[in-house]
Image 1: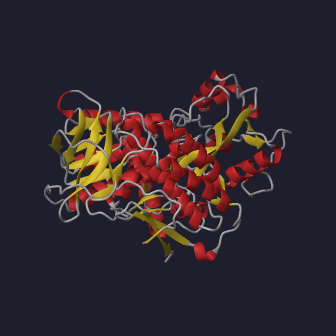
Image 2: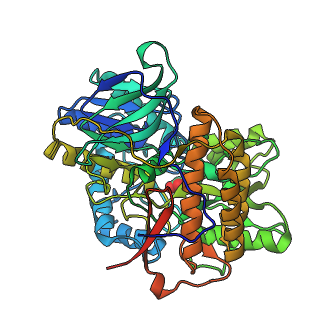
Length: 549
Ligand code: SIN
């Protein structure tokens, strides 16, 4: 991989931190407690392995519980895996790995049934059959949901309870992972981490393990407005880069078309207004009440997400407004309250009643389609290091993830990872000294500046100029250093993933999926492939292009 041109900060190869003051050992260390991490832990237990799950705040604080729409899987006898694969690949605009997609759609239904056996209660018709709905990019009703629009909360509840029932899954909360530990042979053999706790686990320590599974979720917090919770700071991707793993497709950040815009929402995380509302007949309208998506795509408001986000962005640019509207009034109060209780509660709390008012909405960063590159068994380029869920790039999403394929990906690849680990798990190796190279942490105060720079320069719409400005600002922010502590480690992770994202977006001179370049407005054949990123010994980002086979 060749290092990038100047203009980028040199990044740390290691987070500055105290030496580990405690250590413990487990068979497999899982980092993250959303659908991917907890499902991996449960499958690993079925293989008889001792598992430790570490999570940054509390077990339920990740992205999973915020998921509204549902899980896409072929559960209707009239639907087919081929049709689901087709929709996934259309959304991915030529960059999906067809083999990975086949794995996803063929193994998905069994994994959803397994989740039901673990206790997740999905919404059903009076005859007991599963209710299936539709979201953008799907040409069939294939999305299961729970509690109307509270799918993630139900999935998280069921998995949390299953994990709590198993005494051989050890849970360590308030644990921020720092860096990967590797053996003399280069295999992952644990992690350093910082635990805010009491007793022997307080402070910086090490957990040694025979394999490590990263399931740390996304990086939406690199932007000023995201549907992701505050914990989504790209920790897994940044850790993998520092450890020398390959990261790919990070330019493809999906902006959800409809986050709730209200002066009452002051946090970086914005409430999601599920696409399932459009699946049930809601319309997007501009200030004048015109349905602007009609005529832009055959599926109108139910076009793939990138198409709808771009449609909204064009209206915002033309009018100077900061939102368009979702019209749900014709769906009626009774239906809305029953089918979308979460959305109705959050909008009414801000003074907008979806039964009588238009809902102001705008795009917000939602999902990282790229991440740590893995094969079909979830293996990264570092032996013994696996990645699962949003932190990973398995190849199923290509340039733009299809709605409700993310929870499914977590389920499917968690099982594959557990099977692979159980097939070939060596004994515990001794870690060697930490990697050489720069070790520092960023000033946590840079976080809002970084978010603003990324939103302006590398948001929904990008250009060479906007990306160069973002890169220069990241470089400047990287010069502001601090002493090690949680907020500083998180800021360093944000800086690391933001730099990789901007570098990728600068290099990819085309518009494809959720990467929209104003100065290169069409998809180009020579860009049909993936940008792979690494971090060299000096902490410089390097890049290589790999054409699609
Ligand atoms: C939504 O409910 O609109 C989000 C679902 C997803 O991101 O797949």
